[in-house]
Image (cartoon, rainbow, N blue to C red; front, side, top):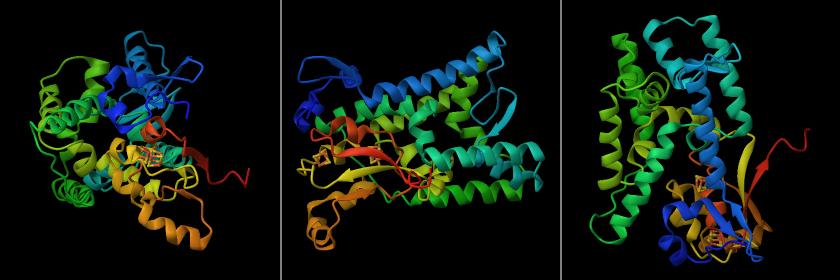
Length: 303
Ligand code: SF4
Ligand code: SF4
């Protein structure tokens, strides 16, 4: 209700950078969730950069494997790949992966994609241009069943198991970008630009939605994670803006009006986004003019 962007038309016409703030009814400017999300990604990656360049030893390494104040952290898919390639599990890998798993089980599985991944920011800019081109009918939208990501996930691990080589790391844009931010230029950055061009001109968020096994691993945690997005049917007027804003909008299938009758029969008014593909990015919060979304912590009754 306080949002400046009160219709889909407003949202579509908004310039990219105007989506970092909104105006309240009183005319005050407030940061959107997108602003806080980008701040999170930028600060995490600045911490990597400064830890290497001025040796502040806050967050050393890259997104694939790091040390936070000396404490080991490892990306879960990198840990799985390393295990598949070497057939051994080192103590530091166990410490690092269990810590990461517990953290994302609490804050939301795929929140990594929205709140930490450096490629997510680039991909979001690409998505903006992609949608502009689709609306102008210069390109057409192409989409597939997002469950294809599980096939890619399995293939990368099986090939690594057979070959003993971390195949995915050669093409992993998260690792490439993270190393680029920390250590500087390498030719591999061209590959990241190729993926981005595919996302702009071929299919919306193609890498994130259909291929990335890093996000797929966090998807597996996301189904059971404690922090979830909650939707309130009584506030929703089914304008559809959230379905347009969410690039994983199959996770919002349940909000469609055709399910209202069943909800009313069961006396349900609030529902959580169960699907592990939800990145907890809060783009649906930002575009919803009735404030029908909020975060909920499923373990709140235990604490
Ligand atoms: S939740 Fe909000 S943005 Fe989504 S359809 Fe309902 S009113 Fe529109
Ligand atoms: S449902 Fe909302 S929070 Fe989840 S991915 Fe879609 S826009 Fe982001």
